[in-house]
Length: 440
Image (cartoon, rainbow, N blue to C red):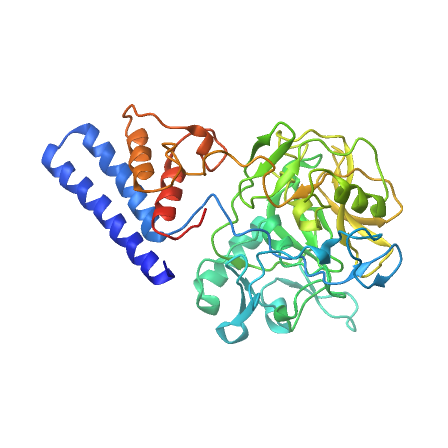
């Protein structure tokens, strides 16, 4: 089914659901029917929007396209050779062409991998969107006044929205996940894609994600575009801001895949539940993951490893994972210094937990392997609410019955968002499959 016919079917099906619920509402005028009307209306509108809040197309690429040994760039090795299994050898499946498009006469850039739109900074708007504090030395340029992220939202982003900047009135401060997604780990300083030119300062930028460690609400997460580090800063610091527009990236959702693995419901990635028992060098970390059985395991790239950081809690990792406190290797080299690779801090330290930095490749860190698909595929597909081995309108109807409080036999092992229940997201998922908008 092509996209056009899929959308038409989706609209037709949503209309039918909504029409039936309206007829029943006016015919029966009962409290329970009102509940049915509301449930059906919500599901119908979700189908009309053809959206899926619980899933994403996967993580965008890191930008790294070269391979490295412990000191320099090399020709990418083949399976079985030393240093096989690094970032550039496992390209992202979510890498549309083009990845970025400059829009609105050069005022904004659209990321086709995340569907987010970003503000483009120029020498004029970099200064014009900040309060400026003249430097005491008249020969030096003026500097931005120190701003809290909340102050920026109130004073500057409101201004962007009121002026309908770039034809958009939904600008906001990005989350740490969103801002990190535009770091280009294959670029020299600044570590950002060329479409964001002309002005790309190689300094830190605010995110709207508050730090949960030692500093509490007084600090927020930042991304440094010098090389791409992810860290924190006191909110009174003077830091740049790049506004974003679009639906906020959903929080990560994890659930056990089997006794030894954990599944990321957003990306479909499968993780080792328990990391390596010992620390190892970067070279050994690559080999360790490639040697795991059954095959398919690899060392995660920087953004994959960072994706299991839970910025809403402390320590910053989902409870489905077993944790050995320490730093963990990624497969991504520091392009600015080939003797270093990226790592993520899971030490539980009040000052650094969740940060993303680089270290010498001979340093000893823990390893948590990842793979792209489940080791033990379920006997029944996601969304197959009634266990009839297919996902169709019967599953949609059974899901609606559950929402309506009607007793019906359903199976929670086919739920899609990791909450162990059959609910709105399962109904929407089944509806999308039935409409041909999603493949199993």
